[in-house]
Length: 372
Image 1 (cartoon, one colour):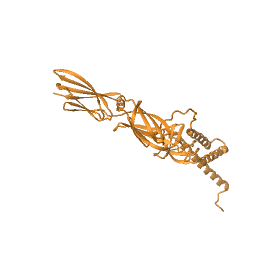
Image 2: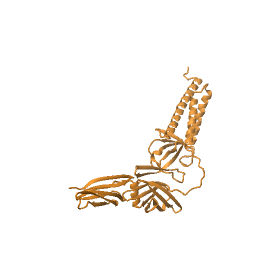
Image 3: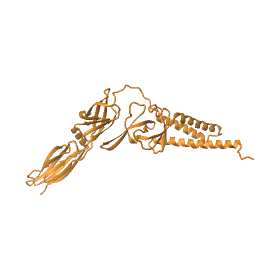
Image 4: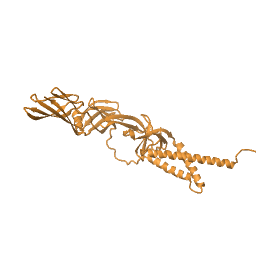
């Protein structure tokens, strides 16, 4: 007597096991694709997949390879995915991470580039990066496997007398696969005349200690000469470093931007390696500090903690010969310097009101200057 199971019984158990494994695997695939769609709309997710259809990342990632990305940190050299829209995503390598300060706070920009592309992408905020690529599934592996799974599901559908679980899964995975491929398909580009090349700026920020503009660029070509204009006024180019340009604008432009809150229009024109002439534009806001007002004896001290001049208006109300009088003076306090004003010698009492404008807003402070 033997314990071996009849062939029909073994075939039944193997078929049942294969069917259960198929359902579990298809369920996992559907879950991952669902996470992928959620990630492109800014919702929380764990992992996602995307199909690459361009050759911009060859040889690391080929057309129709599938990448698996995760919601994790990244650094220069990592391959990441970012989405311009929920239906258009890009898989490129991080070539630079730029940190700079603006009047609205610190900003971090990420610069990416395809391994097989000549130019870098436009800088994008770090929060626009969807995830870091952690695995690349070759097209020779995932496409036949997916087709096999769908074929098995269709076989079960043909055998089933009514539409069941496997058929729904097969239909769902086909629809989600098409959506995933569509989400990475490049947009059609209509041929147009090429305009003047644009100098690819990574960012412009202000060195408030030296009143200079630090201009970062991302191109691999080396600058041989450059001109910088701020609000159509020529700025002095102090140095040209590796991927960085330092220029000093007219301090009066910084002072005006401090008062009005209007951004500076920075225009850069440069020669790269002596073979190309590129240009770029950037807008930068000017921040700063309020003047510091103090009294020493009968003297009014107005200190400017900024590197550029700040215009202040000083109104004095003083008592002389039993009557009150007003005097008004407008002065330009140079950067990192102090202006000293005195109350009239014959004044019995004096009070000072100091006015200035910052970011288009009128500000003032008052203080007793001379009392009995």
